[in-house]
Image 1 (cartoon, rainbow, N blue to C red):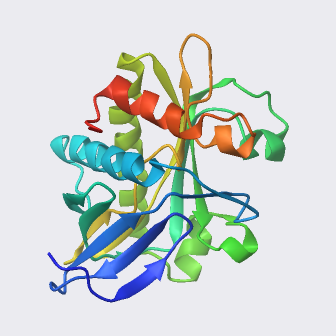
Image 2: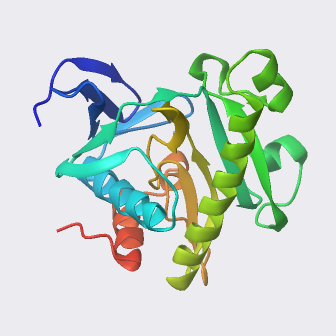
Length: 237
């Protein structure tokens, strides 16, 4: 598989065309950012850890019947993925209240949410990813009603699978975001699943093991990512 033309770059990943029209190479960089790019840094090993972490999670989800864009690991920091027509919304599930939810609603940080809360956000960094709902999605043609229901149902299924996975290894999956895209007539889970895009706490201590360590200047960001990876069995070596 040959890396072709550079297609686009996000905050922490770059995407390249390949010699197949249906496949892309996703390169996980060591870049780290927060607050819509206001805070940035380079963290050694982060690209490698996130690449292998996301591949592991995608394969776990595939084993549970959740179709994803993941094809294979290519190098330590590159994966081959299907080329999707991405839907411009993020699907967020919150199992425990923290972060922006507490700021928006004034609720106590750390309370369990029963049932879990589902939210849609528009992918638009310039507007700080505003919250939207099914009516916005329908009115602006971002997705069909059937696609909306599929994204909601699949995201909750992902939550069921991963909540159990992390809980078995003494961690809490606090919240996470997912993205979906169209491929050959069906929706697939795309983008990534890494500690960059979710919150994970230790069960006993509630120590933060995710990108909040970077946001809050707690240090040990990559070390925390590696700790999570080791606990759930991601092969990093």
